[in-house]
Length: 315
Ligand code: COA
Image 1 (spheres, rainbow, N blue to C red):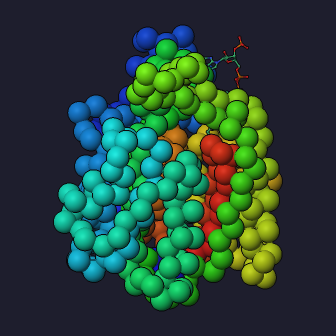
Image 2: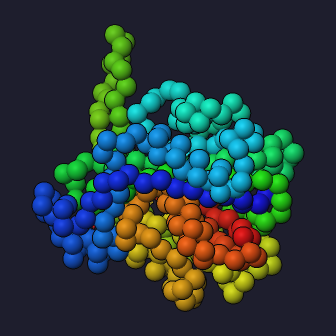
Image 3: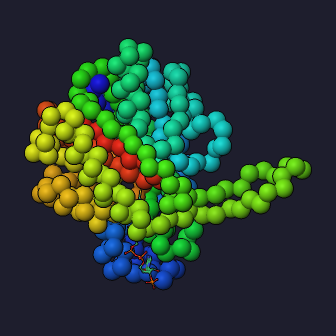
């Protein structure tokens, strides 16, 4: 399949590290040196589905299509205010879209998982124009009294439109299930019959384990994916890495031995926006005119699950 449009939308509220330091025992120096994050966009009065709709409209316009041209819609989302229906239906209703839509919850690699699903459907001849939207609000998952998690995240929505073609060269999805590394519990409605204990626990993370997983898995995914299609690191113009932490991105870059200019980043202004991270970065690079036709982009993302994914896409 080919990519034909990108879009993104961000909450207007920007929170700096200094603002966090006013109510948390942290500092701009600690956050910047450990993560590379200086500020993040945080949901205040917006609804995440509205940001998803805005990102979708921009991606569809960038593709030169109408909403009615989209015949399949995939949403990648971890949390939103609705339990049901899926956020894909909420966004589809807002856009006036009538095609089938599904939700996936694959955390940070969700955009690449969605690309793999879209490619499978398009290759099978079932759908022609697939919209992927990743609306994410991870700032609603952490405790804002927990300095080890809340400083890491930011909100936003990224989107892309794909159509028939052979520009997606390969994808690689993988799982190393370990639900104790990144997790959160929410409480379900009690019934007269529930006797087990259920608790509400905000996002928990074994930061160092996740860090090691991210660097080693991403470097492995990228190497194996390229080798599978007889390409090398030198064939790649840009590495579009999940923006979780600048030290993770640098670790991957050093493991692959690639110079900085082929690793675009926006972590400093966004923090980790889960599956929205890759498509927001993609849209920002596209709007800046960074890519030229024929450029090879490699995507790599990792996160809760633990899941990881990578893809090679010719621009
Ligand atoms: N400000 C100041 N100090 C902080 C802090 C903050 N925001 N967060 C944690 N600390 C403290 C800890 O309490 C600890 O203090 P102690 O030594 O007195 O116990 C100290 O800093 C070191 O904590 P540690 O967790 O060992 O730091 P680290 O170097 O591993 O960095 C992360 C923490 C979270 C930045 C790092 O582990 C990381 O980036 N992990 C990957 C997280 C991630 O990206 N997850 C999402 C993947 S999709």
